[in-house]
Length: 293
Image (cartoon, rainbow, N blue to C red; front, side, top):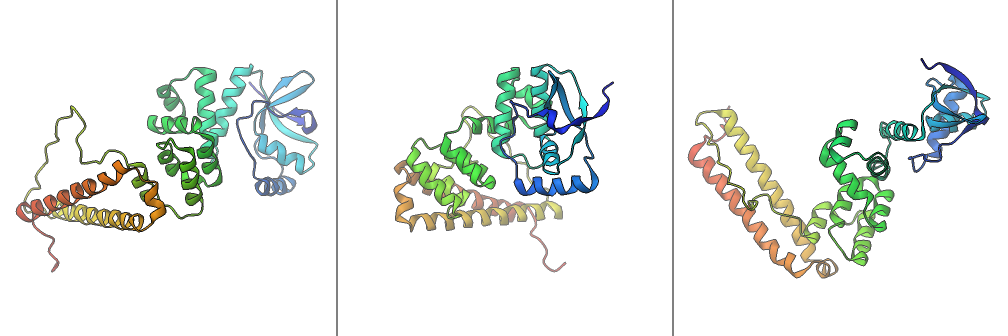
């Protein structure tokens, strides 16, 4: 069984295959201050490397300990081979709360390439959704301008996936600048990129789903139907507002392919008909909400 021992900080070498891309200096300074006062509360993980040790997990604690000028640090010494050490290091980093989308993407890609994991196996091992893994792997293969966007603003990951649909790098860069500046919403970007297949268009070969009628007299069903209708109305209103904004902006219109412009009216018409149909169903088969309750 591995034992915790005090290892000289100066004899520890950083992991040359460290999957983490960056460290926040302010956060390290705060951790160093805590270590000066309370010490290192959780041991790091190292493996022997000649007369020294190679770090496997806990590089942030090790860096902060150096800043705090500690002579030693508690560590668990294990005899891992290079492959096992890399896998443990990656998994340990993926468990961090502050891991960035780009770091995740890089680490997922390394696990598929270094260890031969399939997307399904990786999802099971990490407890992630298969689609989540696939999207991060797409990000790891994305053009440099898209990865740069995500590095500048972590909250633009959905924008990045939309930009991947565009093959024109100059157009992507122009749009990315607007996204970073906060001038381009995700809804507007989806209009520019084509927005994908509308939810109401059936997939080829797929049988139409049968609608389940609301049982008359069930107030909860009526409320749910009314809420769904209000939500649809709200989404349609937002979509129209976004479309109007774009149509008023000549610079934006120049970036929209002619085929996408032609689709705008069709998509809005489909949505309008869907809402009108929902209204008719509610009025004919389900009771309205009683506002006098």
